[in-house]
Image (cartoon, rainbow, N blue to C red; front, side):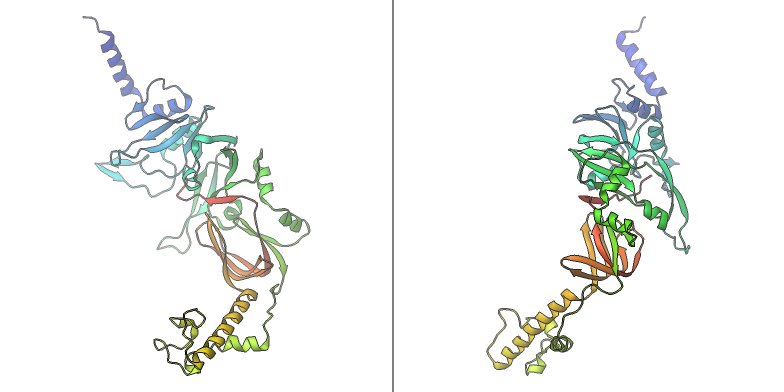
Length: 384
């Protein structure tokens, strides 16, 4: 008896399922040859807004499929360059085989070979971008870079590793342009793999132009004039002098006041919690509710107010430890910091509170100038 159309169709689907591999399905997504097929094993294609999404559903977390690739309206495909949570897991004898390296999994190699452009999807989340508005300005060219890993417990120095990087690129989202790259200076000087994305102040058409507009004119002029200029992350440092550019203006009386803070015991008052300094008083003498019911309390308050005035003046004109920046990439700790006309000047060791920058030591005093990027983000998570 001849097969019905339904039976023929079912048999063909079963044969297709039997012969198609995950690699074929991924390649078909990139090249647009899947037709009406939207599922294969744990892989599926869904429609989201104005684009197709290739995702992977793991049985341990069926409610949260892992998004692996997006197909744009122009037909180009971007794939996730981050180290993946579920995709690439391998099993042996019923148990998962742990991955201790940071290399790409096979699926990432397959999709890149098929023509997808890898880019870390964490940047969309951390920079609060809507990938549905994504468009290319300058596409990346993949490369391999050498980085040094943190030392293990039995190592003095971490080993080197070759890391696959998707490459520098420029893309636009909602009429704003962004530069995505790794900090080339950190790679060259410290072997630190530091991917970042910066919102550019205006439109550009090349990687070189993007870097050019990120450098302020003041910094460019200093370099042209042979002045020493350093950089750490989004900050440039222009050398100005050997000595601190801000001089102390304290009088001799003010210096004595600063060296001898008033205390309760000195004015015939009882200590608070056994402590005498006004700085540890649980109700400070310069606060409104401090009682002035005796001459001793009034004298103590006058002395405390004068000490507070002198201390604030000293803080404004004296170099001290401080921080630079409060951006999404974190702050930079500074050994010596002072302001003059609201412009920061620094000296000594500068370190970043995250892993992406090597320490910078400045001999002498440098003026701090931020780059012209509207805002920058460091892309966290391992990038394959």
